[in-house]
Length: 221
Length: 225
Image (cartoon, rainbow over all chains, first blue to last red; front, top):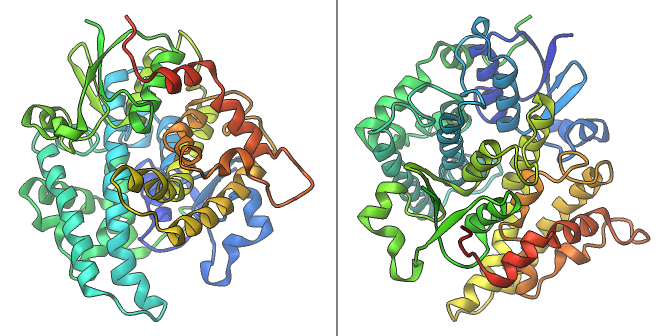
């Protein structure tokens, strides 16, 4: 049975992270739209799959996984063979390489994500709820994010990507939030340092991301 | 060369969970005491190991690794054949562990750290607690625990019927809430007032009384050679 991806259809957020992995790995999937505006993610039926009532989740022949970063690891580990595009995660037996990958994944989760989320909430989500952006607070959040990205610039002067020298899931974890900043005129992803700019351009120019931005998330079958 | 752990002595945060993995797996290590109060974590030498200037960091015979959750996975994988099994190798079993680890970070950690900053962090710095922040944190955490109650109603631990890294990682900060007078974890009543103890409180008491953890909390982090 074809894998099902439940989530939002845009090139934004956690569903887009999983969609990019599916495209990179050439994994066929059926996309099932979950309309957040109607509360489709909070129904009892949906919570049978994802008890926290969030998106995305996948259903792989009856096996359900939620949390985009867990789904991504599962897919990359399951389809680790050569017929399925770039590896995207070192095999578990390469203990040190996998550890460097997990170090980068934790950096995204613990340092980048909370910072970028504050910027996104202040700049984009508040106006959606009829509130006004607090420009002073926003400037503060952008400054915090810039500090994180300055460290990224140091890390990326020593390794090519955020999970090591190969493009990996760790880089993909950033596409749920990073690309949206430019839409609001916030250019920190390319202005903070030359290494971050080089890395970020590498990530967002991948054909899988270009396709997602152009077409949104659609079933591949 | 024996593994070096750069950390403090208090079993909390990333240092606490790494120390617990080391204890559960009986991995010998040397504690390199890193004094945050004197800024030892911000020296150029330390930043060369950890560019964000945080503890813990390990140096495993020249292989340097930071981020507590990454170190835990590394040790659990490298020493999978000794001590408590913490990180299953099966594809689906591991996916469920990763799912629960992600849940901790996305849902459990934010309200826990919000409360901990008020009830532990502020008094340590001689500042007054903000009760409205504590109350908001408790409301948020309770809502998340209502979902944990559903999950733990189906399996004994978060990723199945065995204790794994996913449960262990929850010992990063939540134990500090009780230290600060907010014992929500072991007194969580659940949505059904007739069912006590709840699955959450049973699970919490189970993982909190693991001998290796009890010893760490009592004695602090100490090298074992």
